[in-house]
Length: 114
Length: 114
Image (cartoon, rainbow over all chains, first blue to last red; front, side, top):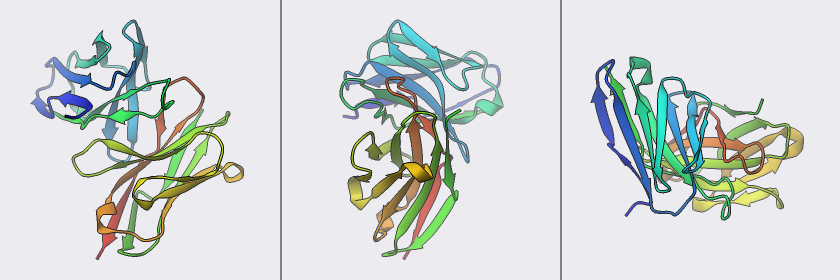
């Protein structure tokens, strides 16, 4: 089984709809991240969390919110989806104590906002 | 501000030829540097990383990279390309310790021709 899983893998939604992307990990890592990938722009950090009570905005947090329900779960929400949020979204995890800054990525969620 | 620049969004080589993917970074403090690979429809996988010590870093699948502080570069090389190396490659920098944040380059798509 994969260490970092994301659900759904693909999602089509309409402008204005609320949508949640979920991430779970079995690596036992304390840190979790959400990125979006757009062609020609690489990956950009949306939010990150160092533990359940520590959530931080990343480079492009506007229009997004997150919830760290447990050490192993980190959800990303689009409160009112818009077309320019169409992208590939990745969750990642890391553990400060064993591999400093090495991040392990999930398979991604491809989101299309119509 | 820290940044990463990958020179060339697309690189095409023949099977068996040298692979060279270029990465330059800017960082006001000694960085940690990473190369990730993304195969089609998959998440990112760590190829190699530089933290401290030896400046020539060997990674998986025959890839290696050399940290050159004077040139602020971390170019990725492989002596002989294989068809299975076709993927998108991302250079990333962690600009300071214990922040958990990665800054990614724009990505380079490697095409390997038979």
